[in-house]
Image (cartoon, rainbow, N blue to C red):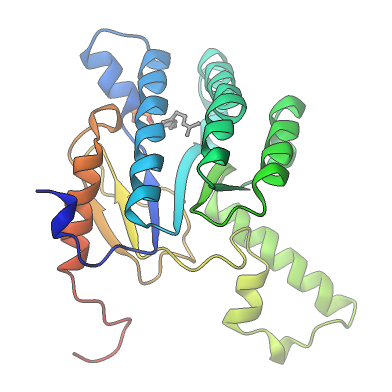
Length: 239
Ligand code: FPP
């Protein structure tokens, strides 16, 4: 299948890049080698998505739960993130990509946080695809963060409880201002959401791919788009 047959490109694609560890084990490599290959694939997929006209791409790069992994793996992932932000983002800036990071930033090492802030600032006026990276991200914690912010406004009489609508709630999420994903892709055969964008995925089409993330290609991305365009989305309304 080729991209020529794609007539409906999803505006916002969210991805769970799963299976780096299992891919590495299959190849008798270290888990970190799996993540290294994963980052190369992420680079290709970001470029392919931007090229075909995706407006927003959200990648799950590091979850809140990932902090509990072996220290060596966590520091390896942080080093890869640093590399990505320092090198790949410069390239993506040239391609007009805007970076935005969602997650509990305060938990990140200062160096990574500074790089994120620099790259968000550098790319903030770019008009191409928005690359939203979920780093130290967990959806339940995002929902609690939003609820606390709303509760404080109510306490301080800056918001009436009757005025809390879906739109108001959305404005307090890390993803504020970004439309909900049209398509979620998860690799590695697992069919779970894993604390990812729980609010935002309410009406998203889910596509699960058997391949591990390091084996995922831009061709697989196009195949997922074909599956998406053949789905009928009714957003809870009658047929
Ligand atoms: C899941 O594989 C993947 C991750 C924990 C993180 C994803 C990270 C990358 C692709 C590299 C960094 C990417 C960017 C864009 C900076 P797993 O380790 O859970 O695999 P397993 O389930 O097979 O063990």
